[in-house]
Image (cartoon, rainbow, N blue to C red; front, side, top):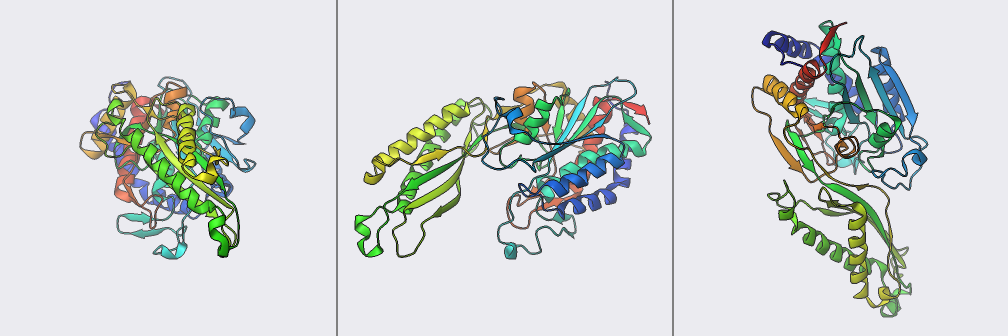
Length: 428
């Protein structure tokens, strides 16, 4: 494909502008649907209708764990998948002239935390100047809308992509990555992919892998009056957590050995995201369970990292007398995912660079992120360049999450320009 001429490029950006208020309204409608894990069905029904009414062939299916369990990119799950729905809309051209494309986004959002800490209800979108607030506004319902409305803008001009385009709305990005993986296993592949995650108007060059695991500690319960004779599972858990923090620092010390991560202050973050234990304030607690997340460098096999985690826990447990003979149990209950690097110089990145320069009037920048992204499914298992590139957002996973609407408009323009050059155009 050749570069777009200047007039066509400006016409495409004008078409995005003309549809932008509808795009904001669409995004607000999507935010109102609380697509927490296991509750994504209503939002996926919304996406199904949106794609169907636009004339796309729509595939909606429930993820079957048995179909993906043996894939090297699979992450273990301990929850019911009977309501884990993926939705894919397909555009097929009259003649396959250009290069095919996947426009991917995840519908699932993280929990809100205490709603009373939010300025307004988290699932009631609030517009204030350039900001659109609400859980999932940035991460990543604005991006899902941008994928759809970029194509709408071209259609408004009387064009369709001259290549196959798949619009994917997937679940499980926030916990396993199995939604995007299920699309791959189902057969959806293309010459490139774009995921408009909240990336601050930049391209993600590399990101870490992630492991989720749960640690179960057993204590010896006694009445608090005899506390010295018992074994406090909660206090023992703190010793194990301290050891895991130490392991994370050992991994951080290896950053100089990992390309693109050398200059990050702290690429390997360890987090205890949930802890429960005990039954009664006056009883020494007999149990404690805590859930963790830790990052991995690209190229690190999650199974090898898991062995290091278990070795660390054994060393820490050996320092607690009653744990020496009652070691903690480790359960892998989510992400078991390798990180990835998007190699420089690929044709898709060059096309994105031109589109971004036209939309923003400046050169595309890239950065490295210490978070999980579904792009690893495309890069590692399809050998497909995946461009994680999206709008500026703040407080994702926090209170008063918000996304910049000006940024969303420019990102939508970039995606529309990318489609026009990468896929080519045919008259509708």
